[in-house]
Image 1 (tube, rainbow, N blue to C red):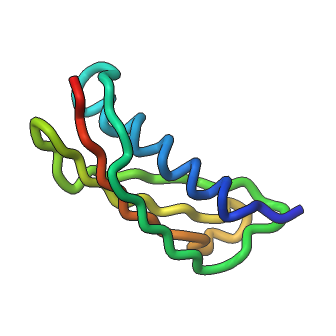
Image 2: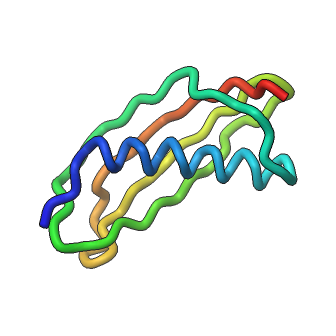
Image 3: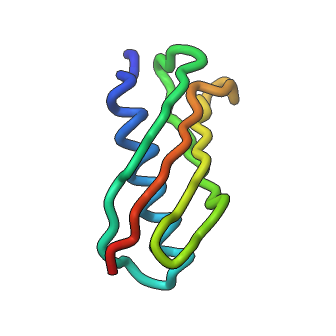
Length: 88
């Protein structure tokens, strides 16, 4: 019933792509430059709510903070900071 750290990292990475695409009005080529994830507690028997907030969207780079919360308890599960290169 536990969620792996790798799954949370992949979710943060994917949430950033969605946030950048939404802010730009469409998907465009991009790649992860850096991701740092801090795990606060284990997630067991719960879905995870993910919120990605762009802190800067430039012409060539995008920066985001991602918060992952256990839906059942509302407790913070993990935080991630991501940096993307915008290729198109």
